[in-house]
Image 1 (cartoon, rainbow, N blue to C red):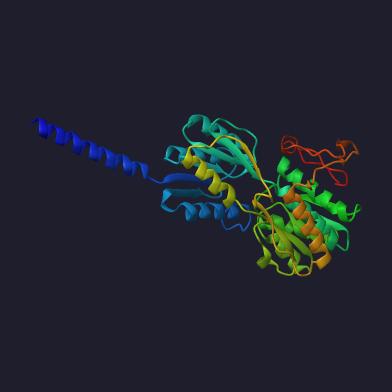
Image 2: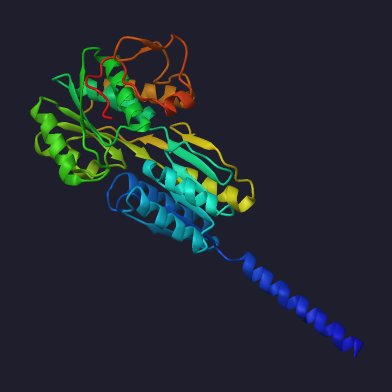
Length: 358
């Protein structure tokens, strides 16, 4: 009887061990919340390319889910809550307007890890991440001013949040390296993705004499409009060359795979911590795609030197002296704005016309 009892104990231990092993082998469920469609060829498309890179890198160790076209606000909270309640242990929310909904759900699910793109609110289980697009925009401003015959560059802006304001300012600073008198015209469209609005804004800017367009919206509509009218444009988030090969000067491309793979690995290793991550050219999170052959070799070489300087840390778009619209010195000579200061940017640099919408 004693031997039979011992055998049962051993068998039971083996079964428990097998169950534990099966549980340990369960894939890590990861959720992604997108503000636009994965076929926008811009912001959301590149986030989804990052998700696919996670699947390729980790294989059957992960299982990913995405929800696209999620409105910022109450709808976002519902979607995030559902992902957390359905066993997703890591959730990435990829638009500024998801910040408060993400924070609210994070408090309800302390054992789930959340990361929010472009925001600034954190918790023990909630971190932030963003791409330093202003580095790429600085190059865009430089190339745009070099290629413009009218000295009028147009900017299609989405919403007046610090990220967009930073990028507008960086474009202006890049332009001023070439032509201090170059003009930046801005149209606010109050959307991240609306091809009709984006095209209308592009046409309105070109009607005002703009001959180079830069966008902070996600469809290729502006580039296509520039191609149709013989103007130039800079692509957003992904390489948009094929939508207007003659018009396309370059794109400022987001490479989210770098951060997502590293972040997921830290979760698996048990080393993940809440933080603010800013990924730029040095990390390969921001890329400036190949320049159009129509960009003169001299301009390409100068732009490439700027890129190399940014990667090396010897060039920063927001190193002083930097003046605001009113002529007030905001950044003294030799000083560089901190990430904290850049995160709250709510003013235009000298040379930008117009006011920031309220």
